[in-house]
Amino acid sequence: MIEQEKIQEINRQTDIVALISQYVTLRKVGKNYRALCPFHAEKNPSFYVNPDKRIFYCFGCKKGGSAINFLMEYEKLDFPDAVRRLAKNLGIEIDTTKGLKYKDIYDVNEFACQFYSSTLTRAIGKRGQNYIRERNIDVNRVREFRLGYAPTSGGLVTFMRQKGIAIDKLHRAGLVSQNHEIFRDRLIFPIFNLSGRVIGFGGRGIDDYIQPKYLNSPETPLFKKGGVLYGLYQAKESMRKKAEAILVEGYFDLLSLFQSGIMNVCAPLGTSLTEKQSMLISRFAKRVNILFDGDLSGIKAALRSIGLLIDAQVDVYVTSLPKGLDPDTFINQRGAAELNDLLGSASDFFHFYRKSVKTDSMEQEIALIKDLIQIVGNIQDPIKYDRYLKYISHVFDIPLERIEKAMVQKKDVQTPTPKRPLSTEEKLMAMILNASEHFHHAKDILSPEDFGQENIVRLYKKLLKDEKFDVYELSNGVDERLREKLFAVVIKEEPVPEQAYLESVMRFKNRVVEKRIRQKITEARKNGDEKALANYQKELNDLKRKMLNIKSH
Image 1 (cartoon, one colour):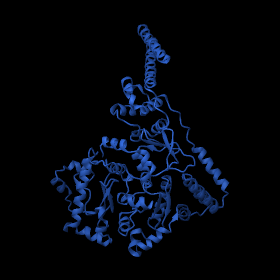
Image 2 (cartoon, rainbow, N blue to C red):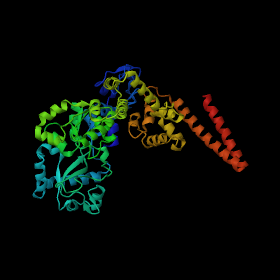
Image 3 (cartoon, rainbow, N blue to C red):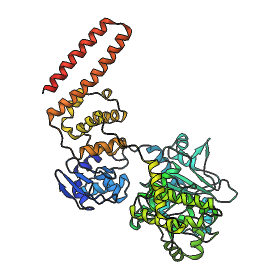
Image 4 (tube, rainbow, N blue to C red):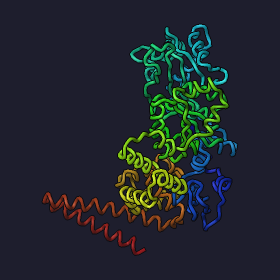
């Protein structure tokens, strides 16, 4: 959404040391600066900042990248917001719409949102107005959600035609199916991405006989139901300030809380919470308070969500509502003050889990203990991890040593294979990235076909396409494991001198050529082609002399 040249300009002009110094205490160590990592708990500093390469990297948690990446990670900003903040600091103006992918679908969604919102305010939207009034929602207090109404008679296609938008674009945006408008006689909830653009819609049937009661847009290039949360765009700033997210189940639950001043609230889109949604929440909040319905289905939904949220490394609490009440009903009957009191007395996930899972036999209790051990095993904070192991020990009267032994056995089973050292190709790529001023030598000698690793091939093509490619750009679109390896080398090693750079590139190229010649020799022998064999052998001998000449230097 933002021009690549602008992003490069912002990264190059930003003093990454000055930026990161606002958040952590950096100490100069050689050419780098070092600190305790702000992204994970550690006793010995493993977080480095390289001012020349304009990158940071932690050898402990493996997080690294540019000034933009640091701001995204530390302040929990999305990419456009991080770029905007740095651009503002530098006095650089940016256009977030130029080159926007799927701009045509964004435009269709925006026009559709305008149509539905406008309809809600007119006589044709009276059914929608009455329904909102019945649900005690004040449109003016939730104006940023841009609620709308889809008339029984339709009208979206006609409206779009007047705007010069063909029906095939409505199909692509998921607003029309087989030339019929998907949303009719429904209250409309526009769904926003983190940049505030409309990417899809939810619709609630005005009458209960309309089925399904709730209907979402079908999946489109912009809208993936399991990867977005309703209200997150409107709530993200409040979540950041409070470091807490309140998770509810439905649209009206969210709107009732929001208009009552509880704004750090979001909701999955009518389905169980997904891993992607959990990770999204963790970008903005360190703690999640699950506020689902007080019935059996609400309790089950909360139980399913706990493991996903723990995996996303957030603290999980659950607020239990009285049986038969949902957040919308509760706040309308008892008020925001009482709900806030209830939220403040939320149970941590452990006690909620234990209370909610019924155990009528020894086998069920053992299954419950194993579930809790599995959930606790994914907690990375050592203090919290220790605390919950002691909970399990105390509550179930199991010696701590036995639980720890079970955890060790579990870890032994899941121990990942040790990381492989850098391959020859990875070492060469690290050297190339570390001395970009000599890249013309690599460009003259090497082609993408000289590399065997697919991730290296893609990266080298990027370099050929953009010779101004900087190391910090590894953060975008480069294989994660490769990025970790390259950052670890580049941030600590000095660039090699030009002659050594040239010789390394030539040695690599000659080894590639040698391998190709040997393959041809094998093929010639197999075919009994003596003439070709003699020619290839001569090529190989000439190459060996050339390689010896390089080594002698």
